[in-house]
Amino acid sequence: MQEEKIGIMGGTFDPIHLAHLMLAEQARIQFDLNQVFFMPSSQPPHKDNRRISPAQCRKEMVLRAIKDNPDFSYSDLELCRTGVTYTSDTLEELHKRYPNTKFYFIMGADSLFAVDAWHQPEQIFRMTTVLAGNRLGVPEEKLQRQVENLKERFGGKIYLVDMPDVAISSSEIRERYANGRSIRYYVPQEVYEYIEECSLYRRGISETGNVSKTENVFTEKEMSAGGENVKPDRMVIKEKLRHKLGIGRFEHTIGVAYTAACLAMRYGCNAEDAELAGLLHDCAKQYDNETLMSKCLKYGIPVSEAERKNPSLLHAKLGAYLAKRKYDVNDTSILDAIRYHTTGRPAMTLMEKIIYVADYVEPRRFKAPNLEKIRRLAFLDLDRTVCEIMSDTLEYLKKMPENIDKTTLEACVYYQKLKKEERDSI
Ligand code: DGI
Ligand code: FE
Ligand code: FE
Image (cartoon, rainbow, N blue to C red):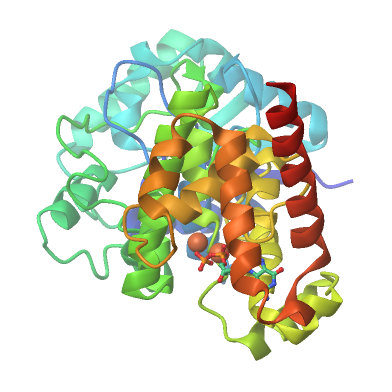
């Protein structure tokens, strides 16, 4: 069987840019590689205290950048691992997975000068052939000398990739963007659109000061920033919602998010999770009735009798579905809080009650009766607050009893009974 040749392009990719792509493509052609794997690394530890963009964002940018090239693939191997990992471990894992394959590590020339920061460089040279691109500011002879020096020290195989000297770095892109300067054509159009959509590098959202120039993938990694268990970034979601929801709905959403975080602090629930649930609770609210219906049918979400008559109720169920699928929320307590935020349900969890109450009392609300009283009560007795809100909602829905959802009714009965039992026991 013919040996496969695979190039590994590691990096933080915050963001991925044209010089990365050019280097990968030139390495592939000049060294006859079958594939190049783009493998974003997780947050490097302590040294660089810049806030690196969330793993999902960096992954999304890489996916968008390489999607048109059949010879480029995305690899989750680094991002998905948990605990402290080393590049040499990753390479070992790759060797196990692809036994008949020769690996080439592709990097910018600047990384060759940072060998001392690599973890176990001898292992890396033993397991791979290193392909280095040239980078502006590194004179040819200096580069050659370093290559010779490394060959001698580690017995490594190192080759230079011939490519134009494109002076683009991710740190420069972030800096430019933060200062309002154009980064168009520094990155592929789809990556540019994603940065715009998520406002990734706006000042105040992602700090850009104090950035080290070398994007070195060969350092010890704390994998806490990568992998499946990462919570979605609330600031990124907030920016997405700013564009998706109307201004009034967006303001309401922010009110619910912060009110929910405050209630969580008061009642001993995770405030970050409550904020996330608050942010996403109405994420399907912008759709009209027809769209809500058709999306629920399309995604196989069951529709109740009352929801058929009144499809706007579906924004809660569809919201939970989108939170999972489109916003990568995996936490069931958050998803259920979104699912039941309109109707409530019997025996709600703490998170469900917090979102249900926050939705009703957030500062921009003004229409409901007894708001002042309910707002005060919210921070004193959560169950009684749920009960009061349910009674008031049921009172309001009395005019159209056929539109009352079964779950709303069951929830109301449950909490009124709870309240009565409490009164009786005094
Ligand atoms: O999405 P929001 O406007 O922020 O708030 P929400 O999701 O709690 O929706 C509020 C409306 O939903 C409010 O006018 C009461 C109504 N509602 C709650 N339960 C039912 C219901 N409407 C009908 N038709 N049936 C119900 O069971
Ligand atoms: Fe809602
Ligand atoms: Fe709401």
